[in-house]
Length: 187
Image (cartoon, rainbow, N blue to C red; front, side, top):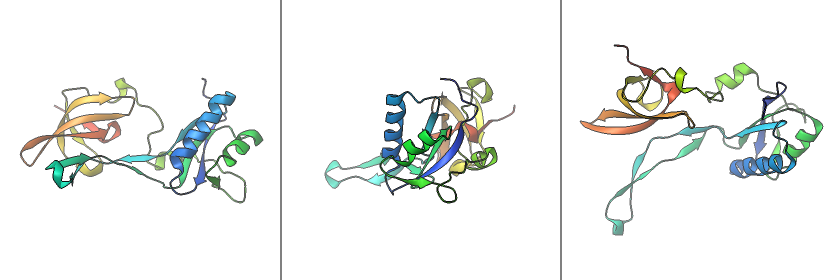
């Protein structure tokens, strides 16, 4: 699939809780109608949260870990598409979509600056450009571990995350952090 230069990011408003269903339905229509060059990507911006301990049922006799992804923009789905009457109709008539963001019925594309300001990594980072590798000592530059030092345990370029080991309360603890929030500690 080639990236169509006319494709821009648009924001569709959905019913509360319908974001995942809308994403699946649009992707299914795109696949069935072979419209990958017109509707290229559907995203629900998520913020990865760290694992937290929650009390388990008493019969289990312990605590369990819980990891949640929070929606950055509940009731909104971001769509990279070439806006035509057909693509507008497909998205607008997807079950759960209430409309596009923009005045009246005219969708307004996000500017590159707005996309960057969302804090969502839309551009995949290549392994060569992350600037660190497994075993490197790093410093965290954002998020809840901002300013902490750690060691890179693994890198997942598909998810754009790295697992780092940090010292917390005298114990080594692993945390999954976005690669954009990690910087190699200079020797």
